[in-house]
Each structure stands twice: as structure tokens, then as C-alpha cells.
Length: 349
Image (cartoon, rainbow, N blue to C red; front, side):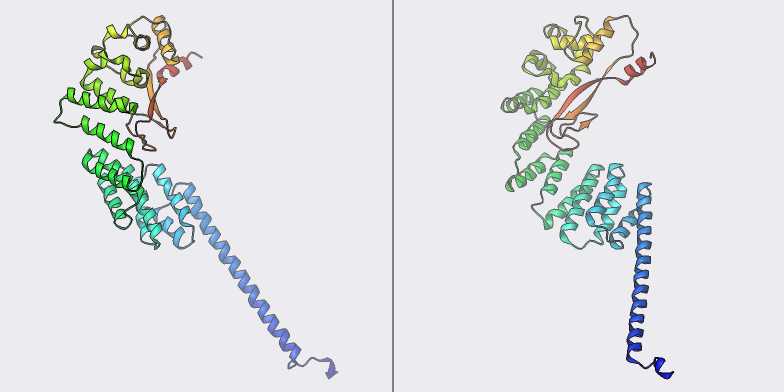
């Protein structure tokens, strides 16, 4: 009978007990890890849900980075949501908070670039300038910092400092030939020491070398030298400035010149200033001409938007630099029938 009873001091029983303890410990560890993982996933989902609802706070981004080890690039992508919504102060708060936790020099430089860009887009030019100068102290060849400093000095009309930035960009083999031409034209236009006739001559010299400043030249002529503009209008591509011509005051239009040019006749027939056209090669003008020649009481007008030849994005107003890609003189005017026209017609359906 005693031979059938396993002695608790039997080595086999001891080995079995050890394996049992290891199994139980492993199971408990596994169960605990599953619990922790599920808890982390739930917390992360809560963060994501908050983000989807637009309630993610600045501190939440730091928690995602420090606690949940969310990749740096993903944090930056999430923070960009503030920029898309125009909430520049919140974006600034995120970048500044991240700068306190990020140690790697490359990531710090990237955050400073984003901070400078955010200040720039928000219109805080001095703060943006300070950030980019800080970048240049430890990274003097940073192209983005130099380029944005160029933009800032242009906006502030500090053309001498802008020229210095162009020299720096030139030294690091950036193509700045067009920038120099553009900056030279801006300097002439804003030079208070020059007479308007002198400015016209100097701008024409640049224009004869590079036609890209055509719109810049014509804007100047329509403001300060209308006589030269009308006398030499056939030298220029008037379709490129259709918006400027459309909004020109009645008293500033030379109708003797208008009668000699089909495009101008179509344009001002559509405007209702003359009645010499029946149709135009430009659809929007043809529609306007038809309504002007009819007895229908249609609320019809012409508006314009601008599309960049380089990045293909649109802008509601003309700027000499594209507001999206900052390329020079690439916005092209596109006419569109006003909203009032469509509302009027939709009520007839």
C-alpha cells in the first residue's frame, strides 16, 4: 500500500511542482500583459476619438509622444490639423511643448522650422524671423530658414536685407536669378526718390529682358502712368490682366483705343460700357454680352479667382507670390460668373 503512495520528497514530484509554478507565473504574466495592452489600446482609442471630434488638446500630443511612443512624424502630422483649421496659436503651443521633450538635433531643427512657418502663416513676422535666425545659428545652410527670411523681408519691404539673403542662397547654389529680377522690380516701384516716369523706364528695361514681370509692370502703369499704358497697350497680353481691366474706373478707360481692339471691345461690352460686340471667344464674356443685349432682367456680374501655373492651387486674390508655393508671378486670372447669376437662374427652375 505504501509503495503506491508517491512520497512528497520524491524528485519527480519536486520537478512537477517547479513546472507548475513556472506555468502559473507565466500565465499570470501573460494575462497581466494582455490587460495592460488592452488598457493602453483603450486609452489610445480614446485619444483618437478625441482627435476625431476635434477635442485633442496640446498636452495630449505630448502624452502620445512620451507615454505611447507614437512616432515623431505621426505627432507632427496630427499637430498639422491645427494649421489646416487656422488655429495657429494651438499649433505654436504644440511645437513649443514638443521642443521641451525632443532631444535629437534633427528633430529640434524640424520643429523650429515648423514653428517659424506657423508664425509666418499667422502673420507674426517678427517672431517668425527670430525663430529662423535661431535656426541659422546652428544650421547656417538651412535653405528653408533662408527662404522664409527672404519672404519676411519682402513683406516688410526691407529689400536691402532681402538682397543679403539672396546672396546667401546664391552661395549655397540655389537658383535665385528670377528672385533677383523680381526684387529689383519691387525696389524700383517702392523707391520714393524716383519719379514715376523714371520708374516706368527702369521697369521697361527689366521687362524687355524677362517678360515674366509683365503683370507687375502693368499694375504699376495702371496706377501711375495710364497714358503710357493706353498708348502702348498692344505690346502687352491684355488677357493676363483681364481682372485689372474689368475693375478699371470708367473715367480711366480710353474708349478710342477700346474700339480698335476686339478683346477690349468684348470686355467692355460685357461690362455694359459699350455695345459693339455680339459675342466673345471667352465664354463668361459671351454670356454677359448676351444678357446686356437682351431685355431680361438678370443679376449677372463677373468675378475672378487665380490659379498658380506651378502648384495648380487657387487663390481668391492676386498676389505677386503664390500664397501656397511662394513661386513668383505665377498666378493667372480666371473669370467666373458671379454667384448672383446662378441664384437668379436656379429660382426659375
